[in-house]
Image (cartoon, rainbow, N blue to C red; front, side, top):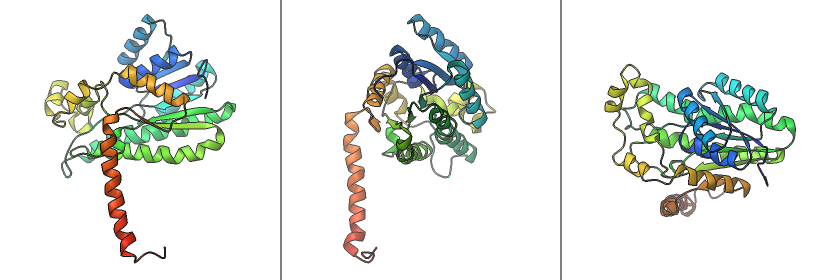
Length: 282
């Protein structure tokens, strides 16, 4: 894709954070943008904020965990612009906890948003992209947490690893249809994702103040997020990587050592069966 001038872009989680910044960058480069978010107030604020910069975007309330809601958002996009070229499945939440102590309803919540929200975006929008024959692009937001893992964040890691693997597969499927795929895998970005856990189902019966008090999070998580890179800077990098058709979109060079450590662990344990030889015929 050489240019996004007049291309139609649909972005989930577009009311704040990375999604809003992506909307700003893509609209600034001449795209026609639809921002989708579950929070109507955030969408209204985002639209007004972009308007102050001379950028006009459309907005639609959308719950990515609901396939019907995603379909309605797609219908809105087609009604407004006639077609869609680029879909950025960006909406996501975080969830902390230790094994054996995470309510299953919270597991379902994060899987429905972080994984199925991406799946719904692909399944609903790919036929629409194919229909006009002009090609297109899918960007799925995963995380560096989809490549390396730490303690107390197993639900988040599970969903982000899933998005990376899913994206690796559909990239191969969609090449023949002139639809590119990238997976965004940032590390620390200045968003409020570390506060997402206050909305988990197991805390639904409590007031917001009580939910904030109950959410333990991970020690130091908020600090590193608040000192992360600016969403606008990341969004510009995403735009450049899409034009360059890079599959993995990374953000932090400092994470290289962790990627290498994981690769070394895999190589070491794989070497064990090679050296053992019992399955050498296979």
